[in-house]
Length: 400
Ligand SMILES: NC(=O)C1=CN([C@@H]2O[C@H](COP(=O)(O)OP(=O)(O)OC[C@H]3O[C@@H](n4cnc5c(N)ncnc54)[C@H](OP(=O)(O)O)[C@@H]3O)[C@@H](O)[C@H]2O)C=CC1
Ligand SMILES: CC(=O)[C@@H](O)[C@H](O)COP(=O)(O)O
Ligand SMILES: [Mn+2]
Image (cartoon, rainbow, N blue to C red; front, side, top):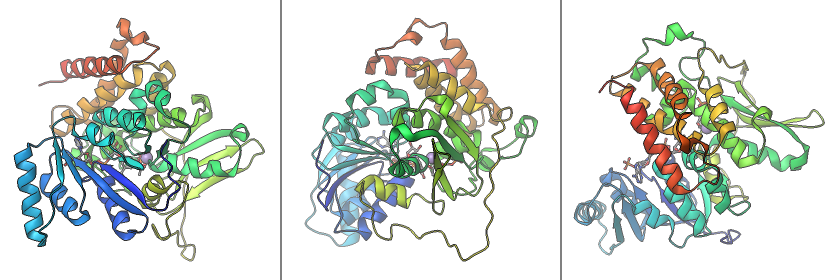
């Protein structure tokens, strides 16, 4: 694994134009003595990607949905607009662009891509021996044992706020002293509603997360609680704690990002305002902290922090995730892929909100009849096949 003890870390940032990506760039620009961007990638937002590349003088710029010509034009336009003359980066384009970039020499690859397409870049970074600051939880969840087999101890640093919190709490005790992990959940914009009351909610309402400004998929997943289901599987894979010792508690203020309960009855919680700057900064600099990455909790103001149990009847996504997580193999890939299809269908107006998790459940149930569902020595081919099977199955159960 790359030696990350040097103070200046060379960062490859995948998904630079998204919520995680733009916040990572903010941290890089505020800490030029700690971070240097050596590569940027994005999907289709070429104007923003080019603007970022020019501002950071990134030597390699990669885009999935671009040609050499369209990306070169965007970079030239952004350089012109910024009055920059001598900037001629290497351009990498096409569906494999982020995977190619992730394999390049760097200290840390930040994977801020959204969805299952983040898997191959994750594998490439791990194979290259680079520290992986992992926001793209989907790649770990669907790749499961495949990803873990490639990762050296400590090579994956979680960026997801709950898992960053747990990693920070685990500094307070030995692994064999851990009794439970407690993952906090906002409960989403529909917290407190019954299943019947969820029937008519709109995409716009689902995108109104109470605390965080995030991409469309994860925001919708927070509303259905699929995000929390994915995070339970992620916690199991990252920290090797069995599912029955991972709890979810609804904490609407999200000031506590998660907790670890130890065998002596002590619980360590990590607190901070509900923002991603600290988890992203720690992802890029672990185990060191970056001064003033964010502002701390203001303990001088009156505030109330609430905790309540999850309503599994209105929000069955977490229980379903536990089921596929326990089953292992390709099951989590099926859950995730069906969800990605259903989320798109919901935003296209083809299905209602409760149909998202109903579709995932239907596809997961149907997968029991598939021989491939029993795959144990997971290969990339197994995962991609299960992902494709689930997308097709979800597509068949959703009106066109
Ligand atoms: N946002 C947050 O606060 C948190 C996010 N996460 C996780 O981080 C990941 C990113 O989330 P978020 O930033 O919110 O998502 P966004 O939708 O805001 O950003 C997604 C990024 O992925 C890029 N992208 C899309 N397709 C490709 C592709 N084929 N190749 C390369 N890049 C591509 C997009 O590029 P473009 O726009 O140019 O198409 C964009 O830069 C997700 O896995 C999410 O679950 C976890 C915790 C918190
Ligand atoms: C910021 C972050 O890590 C998100 O995954 C966040 O946790 C979403 O919150 P909920 O899924 O609990 O609404
Ligand atoms: Mn999270």
